[in-house]
Image 1 (cartoon, rainbow, N blue to C red):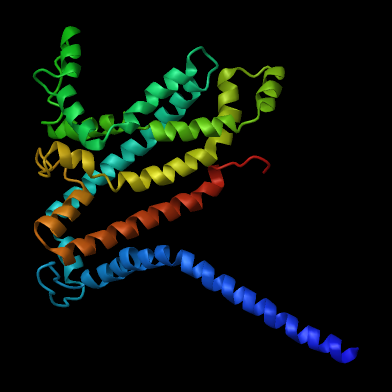
Image 2 (cartoon, helix red, strand yellow):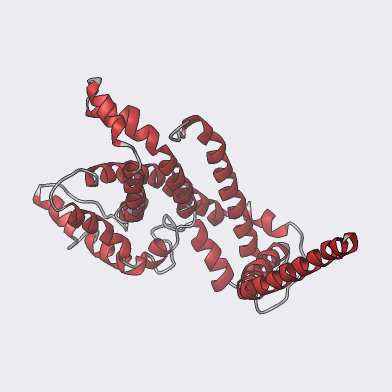
Length: 310
């Protein structure tokens, strides 16, 4: 009996291991298209760009290894610093404004009124408009001669500015356009508002708290996880601003390069001037900046992000 038991103990792991091996092979076979795609279209280009950033690679020619020369040239490139300034300007104003307007719109669209689904659809529709069509639409609205906005201002006796033709107003105009399409963030805020238990508001009403006090001490603190998510995603998106300014200026960044954003200048260097090594260096600088800002947001989140149950 002892021998039979011993042999069964030995045979069982072999069967188990063979089944596990077959399951692993099957799993890797099913995952192989995704793994191959990840390696070919992401990992290889990623590590190649690190090497190219230290070379004079130009797509047409292999180039030579020049070390940190591309990075040194960038720090002496006036247009590079101009693009950094434009991008930071946009991010500093757009991200906070998108959070403020997004939360305010979500709170309005969370009220129990008749036709609420229609209002939510209307505010989400601009998000579905392609960025190129959005740029063309706003170029017409902001036209200084016959645009709807300046026409409305003129009706009230106000002389409207040359929105997209003025260095002073070009970036504020772009921020205005971008705020028009914050429907996705509003949907996320609505989901966050829906997760706040009604018992908190009922208890606050019993204690005599008014709407402002309930908003300040219940809604906003419990909405901070959603605000945190949109802050991170909004910051990353703001530093990658490309389609709207590129479409409106036909890639020129006019007037006076006031709409030349970082990714636009990166694109021009890589695909217009074929300075792919230079563009790769710009891409890695942008990567470091975004990673640094994201890490900073995560570190500070412990002070102001509040989760239910904590």
